[in-house]
Image 1 (spheres, rainbow, N blue to C red):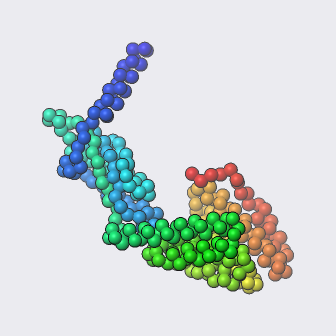
Image 2: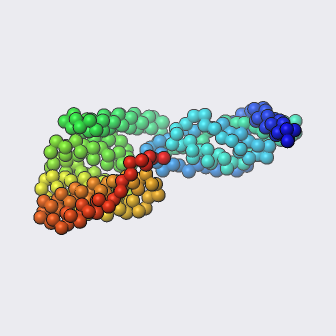
Length: 304
C-alpha cells in the first residue's frame, strides 16, 4: 500500500512537471495548427450593454491537439466565459518537437465586435460611465430618503441616459422609474405619473408579457394614478401588475427571484387593498389583504 501511494505521488509530480514544461508556442504558429475553430456566442447581456473588445486567453493544448486548460489573461468579465467555452472546443494539429508530439501553451485573442469604431465605442463607454455614476447617486439619495436632492440627481440621470444609444432601453426604464420615485415621495403625484407612464411605454415596447420589470412598471403607474385620485384607472393597473408578476414568478427558475417576485406581489396586493377600501369595496379589500397574508416571503434566501 505504501509503495502504491508513492507511485501515485510520483505520477502526480511528473504530471505537474510536464504541465510546467509545456512548450510555449507563438500565436502565429498556433494559428497555423488550428483544425477546428468555434466562434463564441455573443453574451446577450454584453450585447445589450454595448460591450465589445477582445478577450486574451492562455490555452494548453494536449499532444493530441485538444484544448485541455484555458485561463483568462485579460478581457471584460461579461465576455470571458463565452470566449473560454468556445476555445475549449477548438482542435489543433499536434505540435511537434524533434518529430514528437508535445503539450503546448499559447496565447489566444478572441474578438467581440458590435461593428462600432474604436473612437465611437470609447465615446459610448464614457457616456455610459457618466450615466451610471449619476444613477448610483440618484439611488443612494432615494435610499437615504433625501427625495429633494434625489430629484435633481435623478433628473440629471434622465438627461444622461438619453445620450446613450437607442438600444439601451433598460437603462432608460430605470432612469425614469427612479425619477418618478423621487417625485412620488414628495407627493408630486402628477409629475411622478408622467415619468411612470414613460417607464411603462418603454417596458411595453421592449419586454415580454411575463417579465417582472413590466409588472413593476404597471405597479408604478397604478401608484401614480392612485396618488392623483384616479382610482378607477389605478385599479386596472394594480390588477395588471399582480397578473404580470405572478406570470414572472411562474416562469423563473431561480428560488431567489421567485421569492423577490412574491414580495412584490404582496406589496401590490396591499396597495390595491388600500385603493379598494377607499373606493368602498370592503369585501374586495379584505380578499386582497387575505391573499397577501398567504404569500410567504423568506429573508434567508441569497442571490447566487
